[in-house]
Image (cartoon, rainbow, N blue to C red):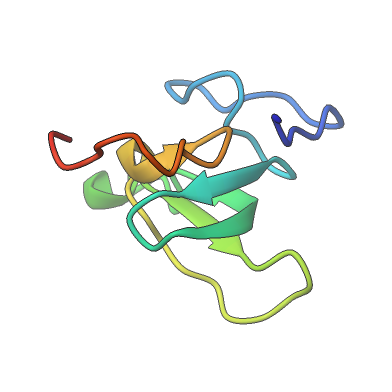
Amino acid sequence: MSHLSLHSTPVDGAPAWLHKGAVVYDHRLKRWGVVVDVGFPGNEARQAKRAWLRPEGGGREWNPPIEDLRQEAPDPFEDWSDE
């Protein structure tokens, strides 16, 4: 099952599914979040490959690397240790 909001456009350099308002899965922390921003602030090179997420019901934001994010929750039997 894919969680995706279609009300905004993708950010340059990010996967098309990773945009403001999209609901994504942080596989490292094993939690869902709503994308608040991607690559912000733009003047900081370390943020270029990161997104800002917030829990769906509100709460404290976190700033995971884009490579930790997925459109869907992983198969519980899949081995993520290689990534």
